[in-house]
Length: 606
Image (cartoon, rainbow, N blue to C red; front, side):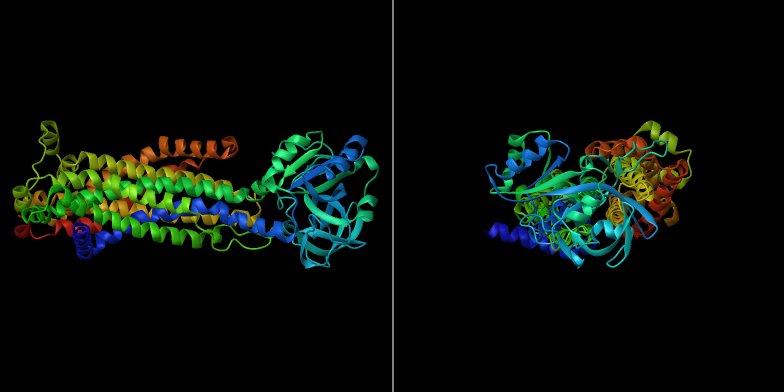
């Protein structure tokens, strides 16, 4: 126990002495853990409004659709209502395909005939106005919001005039525009290419409306144009899919789990984007921590020698160095879980199609464990090897804190002698730490790949909701997700660039001081440190555009099951501008730490 207390006290003391570096560590891990938490809790947070709607409306476990002209199917509805495992049912209710005109807009609809009395299963929850009555129509809430129609507004349905008497929500069907098809004519959801026409009678993105049974039947030209819907409540809702599999038949059946999946489709898209962003940020966090750890090890050489000189074993020294990063990782994981859970509802607005709100997402033990494990894993991966290597170093050498001998490369020295002093020094700075250069190239490539995908998705959302895949509210939610990803990605990339420059300045403090003693100006040293980061940034930006961005977008498209052919790539000018813009931003970010590193007193350093 005394050893543990000693390790913790030494780690906390070093963190207090180096607050800026500790803050950078915290920010790097916090970005990854927050985004990962958002992705993990987003689906559950979005599902809560559906469950609230299901509870408020006595939602069905199975929805069955049959065509009126087929006597066998109608007879099967009665048999299903009495089947084993069914505890309650409502319907069958007549449904007719039609066209609704309101506020100067026209939309296909599925009109369902209902009773004025409340049903035992699937009684839509009226959010405004009242329930169905003769000559009145009730609109599904998301559909009403899309049309901009409210209570008392006149509408035309099937050539007849009606008045909107209410707006309601239901758990028996996903909200508009993802409504299930319950008419015999058939439906198509989503965008339709401009060069193609829908077959006659096929509904496009139909909304759902409720009428009285009599009004619904009066809209049907003949009995064969009707279809019927029946809602079933089961003794065990979790057996809904098994019940459907046993029932078989030609009728269409949909379980409440599939309705839930369709109703939270937007959240699933957001979740995928955030999880991919979390892994990208995780890679950047590992890169940032690796560089920061190496820089701190170089800055802590004398302290490591002192710990070993007073009796600390290599294991104890390594534990002290590792504990600093594990403590920061635990704090970052806790903060990331809290921020992610509180932010998730802002990205999962239930919209008009569901009741309730996402609220504060409850964190499951699996989510807490995974986020904490990722945070600790990032810290261990970035810290374990350099910490153990530093702990195994010579005590006398650590106390002396001598300059690290440079690697002599004949052709590089010959090439650099023909360059201006800043480029000469920059080339030799980069050559001293080739692995750090590779890490810098990789981190910029990851960042630019993420920006490439963001440009693609932003262009895609710019064509919505006209294309029909998302409503305006859904586009706004997805734009918020992209904004979160963009801000966090850019912030962590900026931290990474600053950390790499700072670590390079610390690692080259003796070489820089010697160059200044031999006549190099502080401006030349500063320019060399900045240039040593800009050159890898240019290479990383090029690799981030191609193949990095192209491959990342292909991976996202494969995971989401989307059709990449329908998404246009960013304009060429954006990709061309992205490369030099990245180099300019890196130059601006690295100028401050490079300036501070290039102006350290020569005599004190030597």
